[in-house]
Amino acid sequence: MRKYPSARWPVRLAGGISERWMPMTGTDMDDDQKLWARAQNYVLSRQSADSGFCFYRVWGVEESTAPDTFYAVAMLRLWGMAIPHRAELIRWLQSLQDDQGRYSSLTNASFGVRALSLLADTPLRDPRPHLLNWATQATGHKNAASSETLRDWQRCVQLQRMLAPDEPLPEIMRSGAEAILHGMEAAAGGFGSHPNLVDSGIAWALQRLLGQPLRPQDRIFLHACEDATLGLRLSPDGASTRLEAIFWGILQMAHLHIAPRYPEAVMAYVRACQPVNGGFGRRAGAIATLEGTFHAVMIAAGLSRNPLLQTLTGI
Image (cartoon, rainbow, N blue to C red; front, side):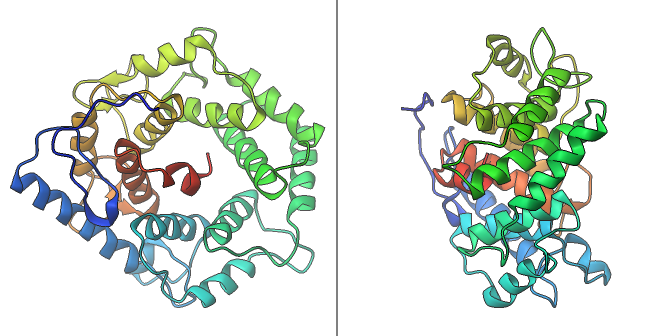
């Protein structure tokens, strides 16, 4: 049983994604209904002619991307909305592989395969040889530990687990993932060259995939990021945040079955990140993107204890 505070006036909002833990007025309910209705319109407006999605198509650029398409599909699934041009979208996602089953990047492999999974479909060819080749090359390069390298290893292991859940993780993947975790961990808690909630959230997701326990100091680090004004700071000693940081913090709290201390502040920050076009920027005042909108929607899903959160994020 998750340890969440009991809600007074639990309210089901657009798409069933948000229950608030505070007294609700009619104005609050109407405002949040409009918040998510605008977000839904924004997401639907970003579908391209090839049926994929891209956040910048409003500027006349029709270049769908695998990440944006995954974000859009995940949000539409959460809202219980039909996926427009579903068959064409599946064909576009499957076209991201070449005839040898390779992808142009690990990013395209990760988001493309995950989007297909949410659409109850699969790649035309087994991507696992591509993943093994990536892990072999990454291990051989001996790159210095960095946020980008950490994110890549998490995506590689996540995809391998998704494609072969009952098989042992290839040793080269396990050793590479363990090495990056060791290189990024901070003794006092958290992960990163300067420990922060984004790197830490990705590292904690990778630890779960590897079956590693959470260190006690990481739970302390997570709580130290909580802030009465921002909801969750990027780092314990910082004075700023962004939606991605809040997303990883809320996701980790959901896995630990604990409630955030300042859910009202979290939602206030989320609302401040929505410009007039209905999407969400990475922080207040930033341009809206499908990634930022995904983070906002999944934060609300985490606060409302939506059981689809882990299914849709896969982490």
